[in-house]
Image 1 (spheres, chains in turn red, green):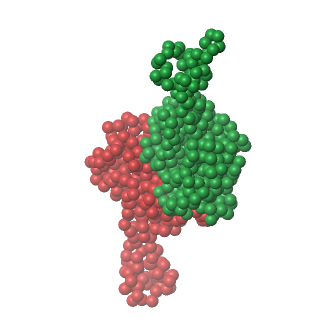
Image 2: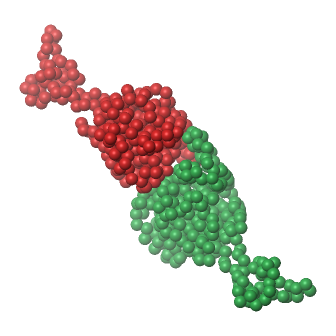
Length: 306
Length: 306
């Protein structure tokens, strides 16, 4: 089952060097999510084959234009396509106002139910919880209220050992107990089928943390500890640390430090400043601190194996 | 001196087939204007070399997303680039609210003065008038308030015949009189220098009318009579006349009929429906009605000679 992050936009501030504003497609099993939705995100989705009609939840980190100005266009296009099923948008206070006023003046009544969930960013909160995934906010420190998002797959069932299972006559309830990690006992409370004999450990639950935009902030480390994939904004090379602080952004080296301290498996770099046409120096800086660093170039998909 | 219209976006509703939402660059002498500003307009401006910092006035026809959703991004990018000089945006009631609320929530104080001029669309109004050009609204009939825009170059001075001028000793005031089309008389009121002898007729004043979106509406004909260039939306082939009426749009044939009845010199077609991947059938339909019809394909520039 898929667990994938595809980069749709990688540039900060204004689009440049063929790079677009922040947006990412996140596929987790049968869920299609979108994080941030900079201008032209709907075009990037089309370019890279992200299916709009599978989209169920959109997560907006903050209300700087480079992170949400494509949202209204995407919502409109889904309306024009006659979408019927519900869509939920998570974002800071104000996002609902911004969208609602535009619907009002264009005299549009959307063809589908649109829900807004207003986020604060004082502490990490569980904002979505279903059978497949839990999504938590990651409060960030930026010029305006801003959240990252942590996606954690739900614990999975233990794997049944087929030959063992077929050698006995199990009831459905007994199979479910084994899958859920419980030994099956007989009426006298004696061990009948043990998980050790009949099952293998479950597939691991995968995780992705998205962190943009923020000043260097070690407070997020406990939240993102051990994630499989971390996207962390890395707007500037470390030589521009003063500029990074002043604008509440992070340097590449700092992003890599966060990744190292949080023991994440892989780091995706992004939100690149316009001043960098070539990104190799950013990758080199990151890898000197944390080897498993990668450029979040547009169109690239980062897969986490099952 | 230039008088040019460059097509930056040609598609209606949702972007498709590599075509973008409506936006046009209009250069008249030393003025750089923009009409409509669909999503990605700033990227299209970059692609086709339209200089943002020369832009002084933006005209927004109406508040359907495909005509203005790129405006906030463009305004933001000019702010990030440190623009200092004034910008004026003309558009329907509501546009100022939509932009202002986004500036508020992003906590942005623009680096340049931004003026809004709110337009009604009951009758044609003069909305910009300077030494070079007059701009008038063209009230259209769409689902919501919508204006087209008529750009008329100011009358130009008569051309002096160099050899004639050099053969006599003219004062500056006398030269100006001739340029302005007035014969020069002596103190006794007798003809001294005639415009017929010393000048040639002035270069013609050029004109451009932009009409999108609208149902077929002959009331606009007196306003756009004899213009050099007419852009008229032509969303559907005429076989979809019912669909055109229902959605307050115009068919290609109808657009060509308007062009013919208004005796315009050239017609630019645009605002193409997503259903048309290939546009040649639209061009053929237009030309069967009005020969000087052209597809408003993206990147194309329509020049009007001096």
